[in-house]
Length: 138
Image (cartoon, rainbow, N blue to C red):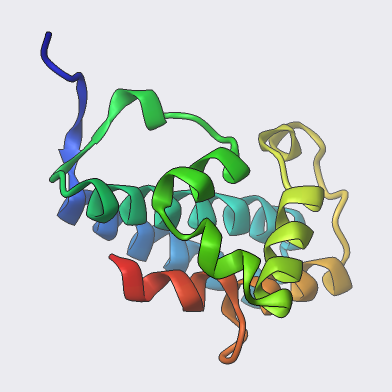
């Protein structure tokens, strides 16, 4: 039985990440905090899916990983052990998991500037940001 793969390859997923990151930065600059927070989780989801592709040695993401469960995606990326041994990285990941969901799409402008900054720090802190850490794995 053949494994079902998504149509987009890793370079297309990486391009999608770069485009979503630019949109995320634009939303933050415009003070659109809810949109920025929604994109924050989307960025992490894309990065985890890229890490899964590398971990599995595949050019296209298996369809089974077209989910929004960040904890499941982290486990499948092969990086859960690295997170378990780094308390700050684990705390930053936990913040995202506890405060982000796809249901934010329906909640309007429910996020504050402070919350958006906390997401940004958890993802992009130079020492222990989740995305900062994961980019070395794709």
